[in-house]
Amino acid sequence: MLGPDPHDDTSRDYEQSEKELLAQDRDAAGVDTADVDDPTAQNLVKDLIDAAVVTPVPEDHVLVHEPSGTTFDSSTQLAVFHRGWAAGRDADGEGE
Image (spheres, rainbow, N blue to C red):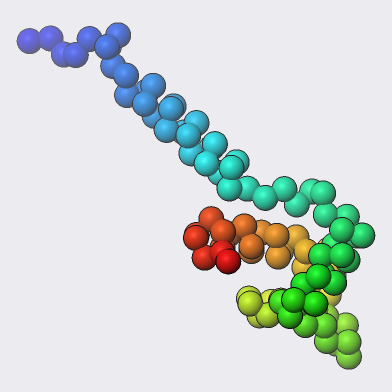
């Protein structure tokens, strides 16, 4: 008995299709942080402070992201982190 016809084997097509779908899912869930410049970061951090999401600790020159407990010495780092953190929560269905 002969094996399956190699021309009828679609497993590689299926694998490629799955890889493409996974890449699309990752792209859709991704957050673009490249556009976080200093003024944008400072505005976001100000809004987060007003919303009690971030606590400034002036004597240590740091900002504390309260929901995660993570400490930052840069408003840009904090802004990028918060965007990713918020996107992760939204992707998990834990958002507002």
